[in-house]
Image 1: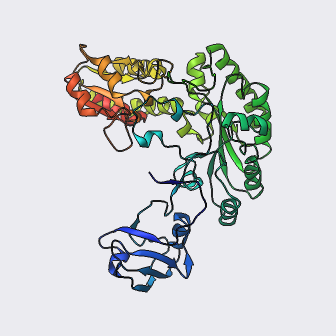
Image 2 (image 1 turned 60 degrees about the vertical axis):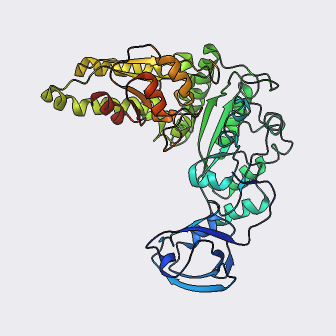
Image 3 (image 1 turned 45 degrees about the horizontal axis):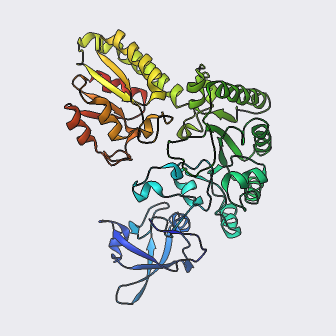
Amino acid sequence: IFCRFGRDRMDSHRIVEVRMGSIAEEVGMEKDDLLLTINGTEIVDVIDYIEWMESEELEVLIRKANGEEWEIEIEKEPGEDLGLKFEYDLMDKQRCCRNKCIFCFVDQLPEGMRDSLSYKDDDWRLSFLVGNYITLTNLSERDVERIVGKHIGPLYVSVHTTNPGLRRKMLNNRFAGDALRYLYRMADAGIRMHTQIVLCPGWNDGAELDRTLKDLWRLRHSVQSTAVVPVGLTGHRENLAALEPFRPDEAAKVIDQVEGWQKKFRREWENGFVYAADEFYVLAGKEFPPYEDYDEFPQLENGVGLTVQFRREFDEAMEDRKDAVARSGHVSGKRTVLTGKSAYGILHDMVQKANRLFGLDVSVMAVENRFFGTSVTVAGLVTGGDLIRAVKGKDLGDKILIPDTMLRKGQDVFLDDVTVPQLAEEAGIPVVSVPVRGEDFLKALLE
């Protein structure tokens, strides 16, 4: 991982791959060529490159490996890519986080984790491209000018608090309070943003949460939604700020506070604007809001409404398939679903419905998280080692199902580098990862 804090610019971009059959291959571009300019303009980063790809006519200046410079004229369809892969995906070195947040999950990882898990990203371009949250402390005036000038959005912003002094303390960065000016400046320019508040008991909750929600509400023409999520604490907090997890009664108070604001916002605006994370409802033992209250689920990736959407999809899939399964007379064998403690009750209820309706023999097992600490209960942070400990010596049927959120994206590797085949070998039965979508979950139960 390559990271930078400075504002030095790259004046060329090394090509590491030319896609076969692409425009770039057709015009003679090759691996190790350097892209210098497009239409006479230097390329700052991938944002500029993406923008140029909307053009129909390009003059591309490249430097060949032997030092020759070629100016290539290209005509193409708007949005058509040249077929190039560059040394850096962002066509620039990635921006690292400058903060030492009191709640930072990376700082709570056990020793020996691979570098990619310990990397702290805080790059606005990844916020736009893939939805990563940024703190604004890594922005420069020039960055903001580009964002505003190109009207780039939506961006995803970790606000946490709009109290400048408190924000400086929570992020352990003396510039963190001043960085809020970028939030207001982008809002004035109409840049669409989604925001999050990581709530820490005794820090930014209570009256401070009220203040933050009032301030963000004033920016509602730009800020599209706000998620309130509980601080996640592992068992590896040596020499870190004193923080406690939310108790059930405290979680219930947060829900009441958020839903109170949400009702006010609904009366004045087109949606609820602020949403409490699913973890609060699980911890408090309270019923989730109706499906419609999530307003098209703008904070789904933040764990807001995921449970409600998942259950709706599952129920609809059961309704769609019940007649077909009944006609086929098919009954799958015994199998076990492994999950974290938070999701156990929810999945248990869903599986019992399917067992009754389809005559299945499926059970759900909650796996204790010893790797990060028993206070970590979400399924996405259950490791392969903890799964192996949980399954040893148990009769789990003919198949194990796990949510794919336990794995690195697109791979069969858990956070502790244990692989799915290793888990299957230890369990003595196949292990299948299932996307967290209701229809896919039911299909996995029935197959």
